[in-house]
Image (cartoon, rainbow, N blue to C red; front, top):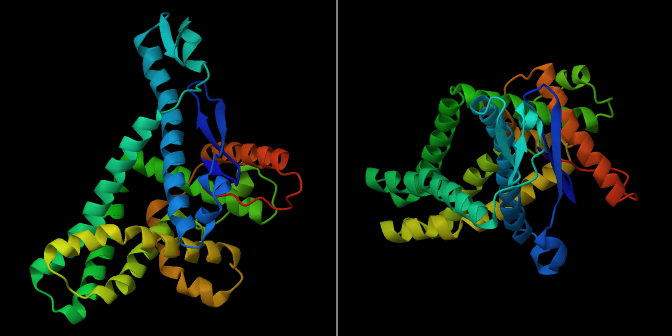
Length: 310
C-alpha cells in the first residue's frame, strides 16, 4: 500500500499471477479545516487517517484472498464479488471495489487502539507501579519496560509465517520508495537492491512515541494507580502529535547527519518489521507506487516532487 498527498493505492497479487490495483482519493479532514493543520494536532489527525486507510487497504487484499477460497469451494459455480454473483470458474479474477463500512472501520480502530494502549501504555505503567519504583525513577523504568515489551512483541510476531510475509511486503514498500527518491528506474531489480529502512516508517514513529512519553510523563510524577491509567490514555494524542512532528521533520532532512544519528534506534527497529523481499514482491510494490505517482501528477500537475509513504 502506498499513499500520496491526495490519493492512496493498494496492489495485490491475484490467484492467476497478475497484479491488481485499487486506488482511492484521500478525503483528509485537514484539507477542509485549517485548525486541524496546527502542529501536533495534525499529527493526531494524520495518525487516525493512516489507520483508517490501512484498514481499508487490508479489506481490499482480504477480499482478493477470499476470492481464492471461493473458487476452491465453487468449482464451476458462482462467486460473490462486490455484492453481485459472477458465474463460472474465472469469477475469482473479478475486480474488488467494496471496502469496510464506516462502522466496521471505527470498530476495528477501537479494538486496535484499545489493544495497543493496554499492552504498551497502561500495562507497563501498572507493572512499574506494582514493582514499587520510587517517583524519581518511575517514568524511566516504565519507559524501559514499555520499549522492552514492544521489542519482544515485534520479535515474537515476526516468527509467524503469515506476518513474516507481511514484513517482506513492508520491506518492498520501503525499497520502492527509496528507489523512487534516488531517481532510479522503477524495476524489480533496482528496487530489490535498495535499503529496507526508511525514516518515515511507522515503526520509527511508534518507538518515538514511547521515548517522548518518558519526557511528557515526567511532568506528572507518580500519581495513584487510577490517575496513572487516566494520564497514560489522555496524554497519548499529545505524545503521538509530537512524535509525528519529529518524524515529519526527519523525512524532510535526511541529509542532516546529527538527526539521522538521533533517529538511529528507530531505524534499527525497522529490521524487526521488515524482511528481505523477493522480485515478485517488489513488482507489487512498484505497481502501487506507480499508481500513486500517476494519479498525484494528474491531481497536482504543478508539483515537482511527490512525497509517498507506505
